[in-house]
Amino acid sequence: MSAPGGITRATLAKDLRMEWRSKDAVNSMLFFSLLVVVVFSFSFDPSSEESRQIAGGLIWVAFLFAAVVALNQTWAREIRNQVLDAYRVSPAPATSLFAAKVLGNFIFVSVLEALMTPLFIVFYRLRSLGPIWQLLIVAVLGTWALVVNGTFFAAMSLRTRSREIMLPLLLFPISIPAMLAMVQATTAILNGEGARFWIVLIATYDLVFTSVCLLLFETILNAE
Amino acid sequence: MKKLFPILGILSGILLSYALYQGLVVAPTEQTMGNVQRIFYYHVPSAWTAFILFFVNFGASIAYLIKRRPAADMVALVSAEVGVVFCTVVLVTGPIWARPVWGIWWTWDMRLTSTLVLWLIYVSYLFLRRFSSSGETPVLAASLAVLGALCVPFVYFSIWFFRTQHPQPVMGGGGSIDPRMLHALLVNWLAFSCFAFLICWSRYRLEKFEREVDHAHAMRSLRDPATNIEREPYSERRA
Image (tube, rainbow over all chains, first blue to last red):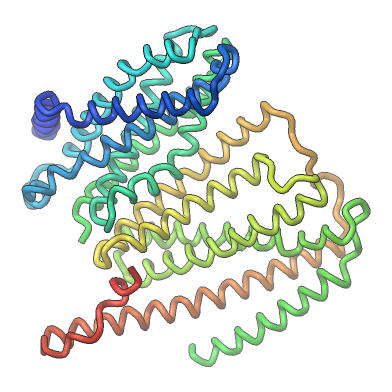
């Protein structure tokens, strides 16, 4: 294992261990998305047919909001003990820190999705007409899109006043095309239609934004 | 340079009045839409001007990330601000035109939606500039501008595909355009671009003065801390 990979692995292991012990991020995300599900089902009161039409939107909006809760906490603990300053003076590449954070958040949000999806299916009486493995692809690519940009913008909003508000303000506009693609792909698959275009679109989006975020992260980390 | 500024001001004044005359009097009345269609001469040039300014913002942000010159950062700031204003004009005149012609204020049509998303992206850019502490603003803002500009093709393609699956609203486009209309449109565009450049320039000068004043105050308080009681940095006061 090369040095950058080692740093990524160490940071990731540390984050996972801390999360395993406190379970702060996953718990708050879980409860938050549960609230969103309940509130939505009260406000729309959908039948089984209707819920197939709107489920894609509901699921992803709930996950997006919940992800913001976790993303806001990502960098907070690194600030507290001047870890970021230490990281800045160390020769370790900034991209491996970023990769570790993205992977960590990806795991947290995936856990959330794995736990919440059965609940969605029960509450909204969902039954997919299309293949399930396609939904899985959409989930992985879509979560990656949210998490890459979210981690980047969380690092960005760390330097601003009222950073909790700043993250959604930055993240949501840029995520609109990804969100649109995720929602459309999910709805299409649930209704048994083709979703090839949307999946390709999210994959391209992931590719472009992952590389640019990796490229720019060092600049952001060292901004002063 | 200082003499050029009033000259440009007078020039854009003349151009704007000539363009107004062209748009309201010379250009023929449209067959089906009537006089309402004349808002076209403000709507479309504003959109083009806004897009150019956003493009300038992208270029200036990349230039800042590479060269780290404060001037590039100021150009980026100014073009985003003025671009958002022109984009707002587009989003306001659009519904005013749509209501009598289509019978609705708003439709989630491709062009409308992508312009709205573009507006959202650049408003979030201005938010970031406003909320971040002054020293880091340029770098953070430039990075966001690059990401925002990269997002534009995705917005365009996703909404294009999203909309082509649904029935299209009746658009005013298609068919040929009267040469006098085209003339009025281009004259208006020239006038608007000139006007936008004028605003950008004066905003640029203002920003430059603000930074010089901030710098001078910082230097003075370094020399003699006792004098630093009256004035906070401009960026802090705005909060």
